[in-house]
Image (cartoon, rainbow, N blue to C red):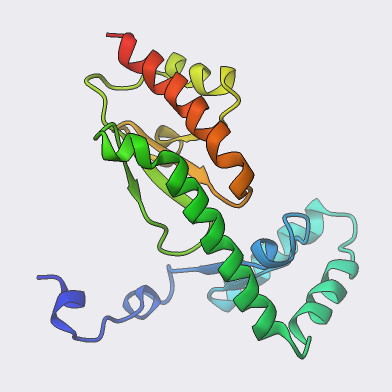
Length: 188
């Protein structure tokens, strides 16, 4: 029985096994991929061990990213900026969705809306399973996709980031997907 459907409170995973569950997060999606600022919630002995390992791996940890994160998190208009960023991400997702709608309407693919973040899962509804060489079709058509097998998924799934899909890119993206889908369908 799914507790989420019953309305009953669901305990966090860490409450079930506090010594073996880690929470890890990052500011990279807010500040930029090079921010390299994150956090870890873990048992103290593990945090100490990981801190020692990191110190050994890096000759010195720069304080600059910490200063950038501090400045970012203490801005008086942070909530407004986050709201604006979320609105922009929604627009970018809508652009991707619009570009792929012809294929979804034709039953050639399904899109799983993002729950959180800036990636979607797309399942290609093909009569055959994708093989590694099929992914070169995406590259040859200048489409960057992350194959599902990289994430432990084997059923024709791709992970797509939608952060860069402006309105102007929709027609081009639709044309590129049409070429790839046609080539994949012709493979039979």
